[in-house]
Amino acid sequence: MGKIIAVVNQKGGVGKTTTSINLAAGLAYTGKKILLVDLDPQCNASHGIGADRNRSRNKNTTYEVLVDEDSASDNTVTLDMPPIDVLPASVDLAGVDIELASASYQVGREQLLKNKLNPIREKYDYIIIDCPPSLNLLNQNALTAADSVLIPVQCEYFALEGLTQLLSTIRLVQKLFNPALSIEGVLLTMFDARTNLSVEVQKEVRKYFKEKVYRCYIPRNVRLSEAPSREESIFEYDTRSEGAKAYAALVKEFLIQNEKGVN
Ligand SMILES: Nc1ncnc2c1ncn2[C@@H]1O[C@H](COP(=O)(O)OP(=O)(O)OP(=O)(O)O)[C@@H](O)[C@H]1O
Ligand SMILES: [Mg+2]
Image 1: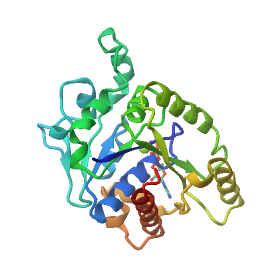
Image 2: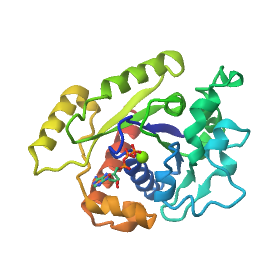
Image 3: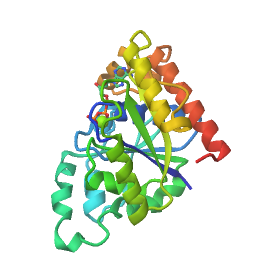
């Protein structure tokens, strides 16, 4: 039964998509069966890994899977490099909040993604959901479907700002829809060891989240920002880069934790 992990932070540009793609790819290269779900109307994960270009015409997107009868399994795109399945997003997702506010959806509209992922869970070891930078219905669907949340935190000013709100949303979803939801881990991203700021932010985040923070961190590395333009993960684009080494370390730490059954 695949474990579902939502990569969440309502703050924009903190490394959610970069982490979703590279964690998915890195896990796939260790032999795990992976589904990457793009739940963001910006479609960055779908474009950045080439899933959109490889999607055949008869396949739909997360949008139709959420609001129509479409199944998740009929609409996944299988890639060779990295060897993962992807459920691509579409810009139509931007309207989901308003559409689902209609009367016929009042009951269970937070459970739509969960209901669609449940039938294909057993095909995968891990299902990774790349979430949009908001705390709307799409994110509530992700948190309701997920077993755990992975929170990327950018080593920047105001890094912790908004996390209180994120944690209270998580607690609300736990109370209403998904009592078993846990925190998979907090990942420091775009770390720059040369700046005091990065070091200070790291201390703050570790003080706040304690052992939930991954020991490894992701450095600022230009290769990570270039890879999506080639529709590659960092493991195809530049396997010797610092970015690739960092995400490989995350994969290792993630697997050790999960094999120990910590979460
Ligand atoms: N470690 C890194 N080093 C350098 N650039 C990075 C790193 N991580 C991410 N980036 C770049 O920073 C930008 C934001 O990253 P990303 O798209 O992963 O964030 P996000 O949280 O998914 O953003 P959004 O909230 O808009 O979905 C992108 O241009 C990405 O290529
Ligand atoms: Mg993103």
